Length: 190
Image 1 (cartoon, helix red, strand yellow):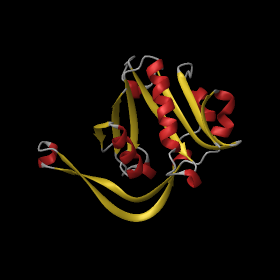
Image 2 (cartoon, rainbow, N blue to C red):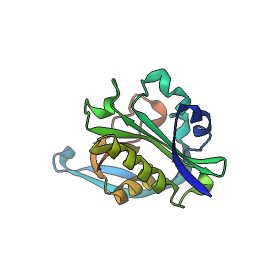
Image 3 (cartoon, rainbow, N blue to C red):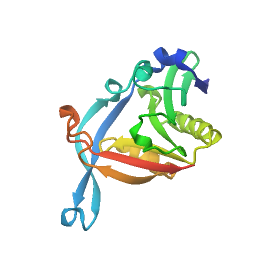
Image 4 (cartoon, rainbow, N blue to C red):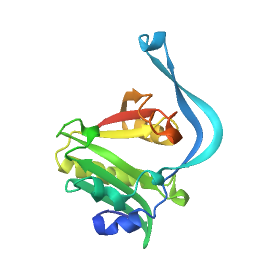
C-alpha cells in the first residue's frame, strides 16, 4: 500500500535513499530569433539516451548546512516501509535567491520518485499534498526550476498548469559538467 505523508528532518536519511534519476531521451533546444529580440523558439530534439543522476546535486542531509529550514516542508511516499518518493517545498528563507524576496511564493525545491515507481502517479500525489501544504501556509504561487534535458519534468509541470516564465541559457555556465544545460523556471498559481 502506497502512503504519502509529511515528514520531518528525522527522515532525511531515508529521503536521500530515493533515487533522483532522469532518463534523458530528448531535450529542449532554444533558438533565438533576431538574437532574441524576435523571441525564442523551443524545439524538442532527440539525443543519445543517458541517465542523469540529480542526487549528486541535492541531498536532504545537507539542507541545514546551508539554510534555515524552519519554513521548509518535507513529504515522502512509502510502499510499506520502503521510501519510493520524496519532495521538499521551501518557503520564506533568508538568502534563498529563487524567491527573489517574495513572501507570497514558495519553491518546489526537489521532487523525486524511485525508478521502479515512475509513471504510477506518485509524483502527482506528492505534488498534490505539497500544494495543499503551500496553500495552508498562505502561499499563492509555487516557483519550480528544472533543466532543458528534463523533458518529463517539463511536461509534468505543464500538465499541472505551470507557466514557463524564465529561460536562462547561462545559469550553469560556471559549472563545467552542466555548462550546456538551460535553466527553465516555471510558476504555478496555487
